[in-house]
Structures are given as structure tokens and as C-alpha cells.
Amino acid sequence: MRRIAKEEFFRYFPISDRQRVWDLYVAGVGRIVRAYRGSPDRGHPRPYYYVWETGRVLDQYGLAYITQGQGEFESASVRRTVVDAGTVLLLLPGEWHRYRAGAKVCWSYYWVHFSGGYLDRLVERGVLSADRPLFKTGLQQNLLRSYAALVERARAEPPGFQQMMCGNILEILGAALACDGAQTESKRLGTLVRQATVLLEQRMAEDVDLRELAASLEVSYDGFRHAFKRHTGLAPHQYLLQLRIQRARELLYGTEMTVRQIAASLGFVDPYYFSRAFRKMTGRSPNRWRAESQAAPFDRASENRNTSAV
Image (cartoon, rainbow, N blue to C red):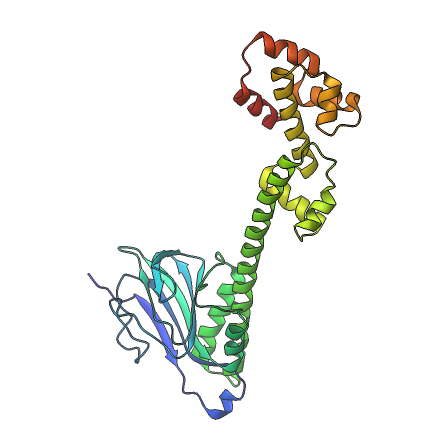
């Protein structure tokens, strides 16, 4: 059953040539609180009013911020997807889209429509894109304050309210893009860490210069080290040492190589350092570990768990 929102505010503004000079101007502002699934109130003028079945296309930009509940969003560039509270929806001019609350779900959101050459240039430069319309910012006080200020200025229309609302839009865009940038950087670093783990496994017997490795991945060493530890739980040098000790256990169990030979094959210049590192990680010297492992079946999974716990 369709129900109209219990509380809905919206206001649309005529745009004068004087306002267009600013290169950014607000066309409409609104808020829906505890809206149930259904279309917006028919009091909205066209083309803003629409039904889910047909969606809509605007000639303006829009930013909607879901503050409660869960719904779904779909556009010409993005297939239907679930959106939760703490998500900013970006609507681009000429891009078909639609969004609504989930079935039997209360939700609330703010919205603002605006235009201007400033936004057009952001699109031209790839800062804003139709294939990246969702910004998972979470519920942030600064975003809530910016949207609340939009609504209050639309209600009161104090002198200069259009320009002040444009400032609010820039705050919202800045927060959304900053969050998106942080997520993108996190994904990029995660990919680099996975590449680094493969390289370290391939080069575990070499004298690996970790700073050179970071440089080859085009990331600063400090950024690489922090990202590596965040994703693996170990610093890069600890991870490399763990790889070498794991390989040493395999060689101790499956070959007749001496401890000195194994140390040299794994890039340890000093066999005594190798023995100390092996004892620290496994609790046993290499020779004792070999004797005990050959007396009983080698449980590699168990050894991996033991090493990971160190």
C-alpha cells in the first residue's frame, strides 16, 4: 500500500540571469522523513515528480543523502543496487535514474538539485562520473549540518540565501569525494599489497630491499609498510621472514641439506642468525625441529597455524 511521507518539505526556485553568473545555483531543496515505499508527493512539479516504473531524467545535478533505512537505486549506468543510510546519491543531468525505499522500510533522506558550469567542468575532468553515483560516507555530522542548513535557508530565504546554499553544496561534494577518494586509495593499496606478497614469495631467497620494492610499486615506503601491516597483520620484513622459515621447515623435513646450506639457500648470510630466527618463530632449533618432524608426520597446516600465531 502506498503511503505519503509523514513529513515532507520541498521548495523549488526560479533561476534568474543574475544567479546564473555565479556558475552554481540551486533549483530545489527538500527533505523526506519516514517515507514509505511509493512515489513522491504529487505536489512536486514535473520533471521532478516521477514513478518508479518509469524513472526520470533531469537536466540538473542532484545530491540525495539517505539518513535512515534502506532502499534501492538504479540508473542508466548502474544496475539496481541496495543503498543504506549514510549513502550520498549523485544524479547527473541527462542520466536516467530512479530510487525508492525498500518494501515495508521507513527511510529518510535530504535532496538538493542544482546546476552550473562549475559542475560541468568536474564531470569533464572525471571528478564526477555517471558510473560512480554512490558515495558511502556513513552518517556524518558535517553532512547532516550542511543538508539541514540547505533546508533552513530554503525555508527562510534570507538575503544571499542562494549563494549560501551553493556553499553548502560544495561542502557536501567535498565530503563525498573525500570519502570516495579514501576508499579508492584503500583498494589501490590492497592491490599493491597482494602484488608485494607474490613478489616476496618469488624472491624469498634474495636479499630483498623493501624500499626498492615499494618504489617499484610506485608507493612511498611508509605508505607501503603501513598498508602491508594493515592487510596482512605483519610488517613486510616479518612477512618475508615467515615465508623463509616456512620454506626452511619444508627443506628440513624433505631434504638432507644441512642447516648451513638451507640458511644460504634462503638468503641468510649468517647461519647463526637463521637458527635464532627459526627458534624464535617455532620454539625449537632447526636440528631439533628436523628430528621431531621426521619422527612424526609433518602436519604443514598445523605448522602454518603455529607460525601465524607468533
